[in-house]
Image (cartoon, rainbow, N blue to C red):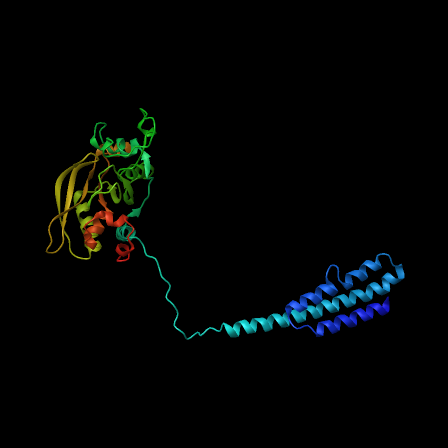
Length: 336
């Protein structure tokens, strides 16, 4: 048996020296060190051998096994390195060659306008606040002093969720028709002074045309304190428009009507050598809105305003059809 082991070692060493590649190496490894290989057969024989043979032969076969394993690992690393060198030589990279510029996506123009508006207002001390796109009738209408019989509640202006309408308006839900509900939600949890803007999507049951969409975006503003006046609003909105359009903007306030403000204004704006354009609605927060939020209207006053982001984008980029923003025509979108 001892002569057989020495012969086994000799044959294995000769076979290892003759290995030509990794595939050949794998075959030789399995022949000698595999689960059913020559070394494994010797260990099987030792199970029935005498104690003395187990000691002498077992020690020697273990040493041979370790030696062969070491040789196989060395050979494997050598061939793997040779293979890698061949691959690298065939796939050499010219680091001086000009690379390809990857194609990059871009933000939607309405997203760009929203972020620009947020940045301008944040620089003036306003915080950006978000609210739910599906809200209750109470927050969307009642808390904003909109009467029960107001036309805005009708199906022609409002999408209602499919539901059984309840007497409690807090249990009736709809996709919000404006971002104003967030005003009340924020005032319920925060004390004055308040200075926030609320960007977001709104939904109205309107016929789609060049200037109307069923879904669009607004940015709402609210400023509340103990001495806030319309003069504060005019100064802030004029500064915002100047920075947004990057030129001096003339504005005028015309009397208007909104249930949640009193007095209410319609704001027109005019660029240099331009015509007057109706831009947004605004006004001083109605006392009933303060009451809905838990404020004492005798102690506080403030202004609120809302403007469509698409409206701002259309004026800034001279787009004449709001529907272009939502047709996903890459030829249009890549211009921004």
